[in-house]
Structures are given as C-alpha cells and as structure tokens.
Length: 279
Ligand SMILES: [Fe+2]
Image (cartoon, rainbow, N blue to C red; front, side, top):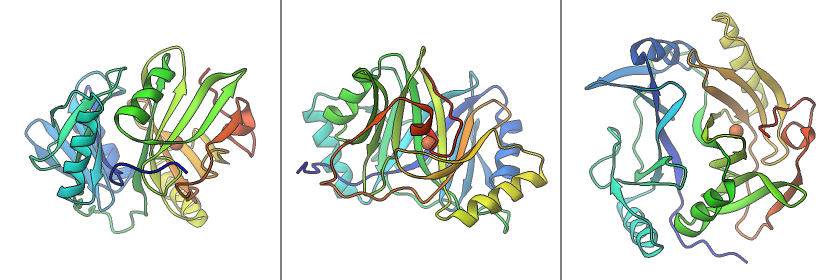
C-alpha cells in the first residue's frame, strides 16, 4: 500500500495572464458569479470556494496554481519534504496566501504555490452556483518529466494513467481523497489545458448550463462523463479562450486504490461519446 508522506492539499486559487484583466474580470463576475477586488495591478475574482487572480500578460498562460495545506504545521512539513527531495523553493507570487507560502516550478516552467488554506470572499451574485475550484490541467510534450516531478518531488500520488502502446497520454494526480487535483495531457506543446470547478451533483450541471445560457455562453464540449475520475462535466471557454470545466460527482478514492490504467481512446475521456484528444 502506497503511504502518503505529505499533507493533504487542495487547489485554492490560480492566476491567469490576460491582455486585459479588467475585461476578463467582468466575464468571471458574470459567468462565475465572482466578486472582483483589486490588488495593485491584479484583479482577484472570488466566490466562497473559487478564486482566480488575473494579471496582465500573454493570454491563455498560467501565472501559478496555488495549493493549500490545512494549517501552518502541514505547510512546514511539506516545505521540508520538497526541499529534501531536491526541490528548489522560491518566493510566493500569490497575493492571496500569507507570507508563509512558497513556490516551485515544474520542469515545464509551471509555477506551483503552496500555502495555508485561505477562505475566499463571497461573490456578489446570490444566484451563483456551487463550484469549488478543484483541479488544474496542463498539456505537455514531456509528460514523463512532469509525472516524475509531481510524484517524486512534490509527493502527489498518481491515480490513473492513460497509455497508447506503453506511451503516456494522460495522467491524473490526487492530493487528498478526490480522484485528481492535477492532470497532464500529452500534446505537441507545453501549455495550460484547463481549470475545473466541482459542482457536486448532476442537477448543478443542469443549473450551470441554464445559468450560462442566460448570458449566451455556449457549452463547448459535453455534457459527458470522463472515464478517469468518473465525473460528469461540460466545458466552456472564457473570452481569452481558456477552457473552464464544470464537473460533478468526481470519484472519491482511498490511498490503497491501485493506479488505474486506461486505453487512449475517445471513450476514456468521454464515456458518453465524442472526446477531445490532445494527441
Ligand atoms: Fe478536468
């Protein structure tokens, strides 16, 4: 049985770069019912369980993904574990976490921030639906390097892998009992793939689709059900083209669950039908 050696972590917030943070924040306010506040040049969009920070820069690029430990003691343990595993720690760029947070870059240059759990301000829209920021996914042309870094240096656990003739095509990592809080898809390039908001149950998927329809924000993929994670989902795009996923019923796993192996085919990524294969 694989033993967890680090604290439990959950994705707490992320920062996206965009050419126009003000304009994009208006979309997050409308589409995701977020409250928008300024922190210098940055826009912080929050609604209780979700937080996206927007900063000026190249569109569709990640500033950082910030994971939270439950308390300062677990964060210190994590810092020591990552240092002992050879990780090069840097200062936290997050305007949300306190000064105890730190960051580290993966082999593709994606920045991970680790800090102590921070509650987010409620949104302004009372009708806003449940949707905790739950996972982030990257595409990469060197996924094995990332897999090694996430498991050996960060201590994340591999939940499932998708293969084609022994070649890694996707991998899903858990940091608590939820099936994945991080995923990698093999692709021709290194890039951000998507962020996901967990809405708990199927009726919320319907309610989200109806809510977004009011603003004529179309579903781009789904509804469907992923194989790995067994979650119901649909995807939309923000005005910059970032994929946003609304999910429900994500699989809950135990630490002794064997790593799942899936074939690289459409039904793995969507048991109900058409899928978006990145490679
Ligand atoms: Fe996802």
